[in-house]
Image 1 (spheres, rainbow, N blue to C red):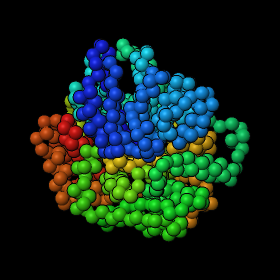
Image 2 (image 1 turned 60 degrees about the horizontal axis):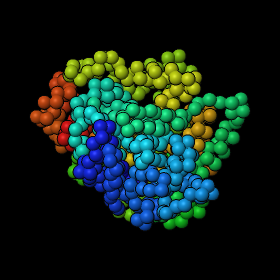
Image 3 (image 1 turned 120 degrees about the horizontal axis):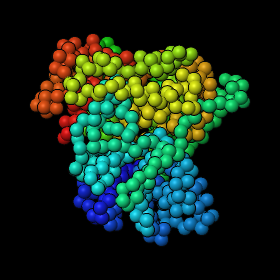
Image 4 (image 1 turned 45 degrees about the vertical axis):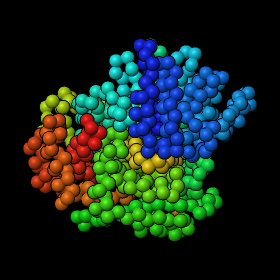
Length: 591
């Protein structure tokens, strides 16, 4: 788990070590244990290292294999690297290190792009071929590891974070109206390849991009979640699916214990993180360290779920750490959390994960976390209305979108308003793709492919890596997700959502955690913006930088300032926080 960056020139100019150094400096929090830069003619790669597997300098990056003529910069973790290593050794490959980085390089030499589907894990990497001059960029199936791109003239730069590209310079920082439309309607989700800035794009998940020395590119999508069922699948009972899910999740959790350092768990007290703790305890893990966080209540809304995390910690005898954040401390750290975002993200979870990661990183370097279960197993409230829907597009947008295209026109200034309903058009196009006939499956596929990648997954990566903490997400093991795609929707929607997962959980964790009301990461002060928080966002949205940018209509901002609690979105978010977060992020990045 680290930070990577690179620069490629298509006009014969040499890669700039100075620009690479600026990018690696910006990536330092992701990799506090080492740094490296390698340039060869028009191509340069940079790396910041977080030591998790093979703690020696033999695994330092960028990793160069002079015999193979390959150089790699890699961010992530390959959970089956030892198995692949043995297979490659049987083919005659000799290894200089004991980590997973060199395994990718040897696998590429042996199988080329066909090596990528063999990788179990989370990854973003760049491989430079000395002889051909070709560079290949690869991102994992769920985009757990990020990769941003900026092309200017005859130069392409890439990095694990968007701010690292800004540090290199020469980026078009104008607002992308289509991306802004997605941000404002889709709860800040901006689907790849776009970002909020015109000059920055991101490599889509599950993509292999080959870049030729003259700048020509070709993309291969190597994996897609499939929602198709055999007659045997349709005949299975709920009990059969339950047992298959439990077995697959056991394997997934076990895979994510691969490390040369201790591994802990972020324990919210919900069914997902509780299952991870339960399965690790079942497998014989002793002295497991767990972490929970809570905030002050606001507007009568409680800001923690310690009652449930305490229950699990006590049940399994974990070394449990509860972190309570005072409102003053949260406000002090909000600007830092926003600056750590590669893209503006409105979820209140961000500040929670940021501060939780700060504390966790003082103890350990690797944690498992429960993200992805809701999208994979149907845990959100908008899935049941999709069952039997005669108009899936309208029902999905009606439940999820923060505002309609018509409402948005009264919120945004004309110069940044998209000409058509871009967000609805995107969903319509996605729903129309083959491979998911059931309306629930259409929504699950969209959320797994798009929303999950550019909200929960990105949030966890950005906030944990801001403190050099590696987060692993067992619910996004691709074999588990493929299994879930075969499960008929009725078994997922049962019991108010995630029915089949809850049934699997009953074999592992106490029922009190399973049958509780659905929780979320509560940060009430950012939902009901009052007092000093209102002053802070008002200043951000009315200062000279915001006025000169002019994204939002003044009458809309005045209405938000007058009564923030009256402007709450369908997903229980604050409209005022949404617009303030965007402007705060732009100012934090110096845009």
